[in-house]
Length: 392
Image 1 (cartoon, helix red, strand yellow):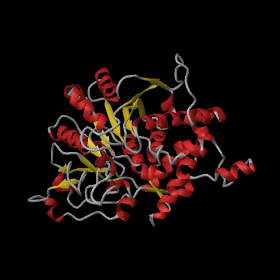
Image 2 (cartoon, helix red, strand yellow):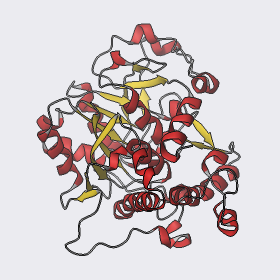
Image 3 (cartoon, rainbow, N blue to C red):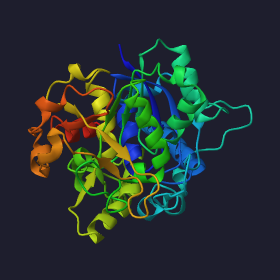
Image 4 (tube, rainbow, N blue to C red):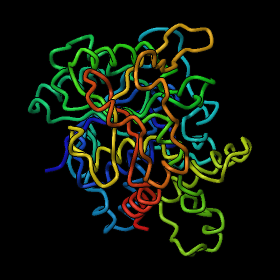
């Protein structure tokens, strides 16, 4: 049976790849897609989700057989707009990286990717558009489904989850597992020297959700920068030379020009330039896809991990008000086996052969989020994503 999931997201360039991977994976059944602010403002992120589905519709019209690659669109997921700001503190969005529209400004450069407007009484072909707040939709799903059967994959700030937890903690505790792409445990941040963006954008929400985990109300698995940053795919594998292909009216690099490739290529060109300007490798970091990948291959209990996956519990707190440390995951190593923790190297994580030096000592911890410390390796993710999403 497919794993029932709610995807809470703020599309967002890498969110687009993560959502496409989820919809292309028969292991997952997407009940709802709930939108939060983060990479851009929530209403813009909502429209970006509609752009994903519009590109899929064009892909299916271009190649009817391609619909078989996306079993996740066969059942109508609920789409709901949620928080457009943090539950505490000042609002911050990642327009500096993702562009003002969250998708590298393709709203201006490629307006034909906009989703077609629906009439007042017209239904969406693949989505159930809800007027409820995303936090309400999350609670509705958890009430309607068997306790423990629904996983929330959170790809942005945890604002919607915190609001749902505040509104009805008993119902929220019915969640089988929360998988969150967020935080930086033993590595520097990507938004500040100490904080990863999703944690920085709403540290109050992260704190509240983590407090629920510490109370034992529900289980959480985290994919922090420690594990996501080394998982990359070279831009040559992701970007199709759209302009050359359009001019030639044929294949340019052995890959056909398709609506979905055109859409993803257009949004990745700007990101590639940014990565080069930062002096970073010519690779796209697969932050959000790693979280979806974990959900695809692992059940809601850690003991089911296999094939190179491993998580370990880590105890930390999220700084909410620090002048320089907002969103920092503060690990208290005093009097614990983490005092002499050895940081894992990028090459070890990338190869999927990473071994946590303290795993045997830390696996007995309870009431702590579990941190992904090992995966089957970046090449396995590359093959999975390119094969499922693009049929490569």
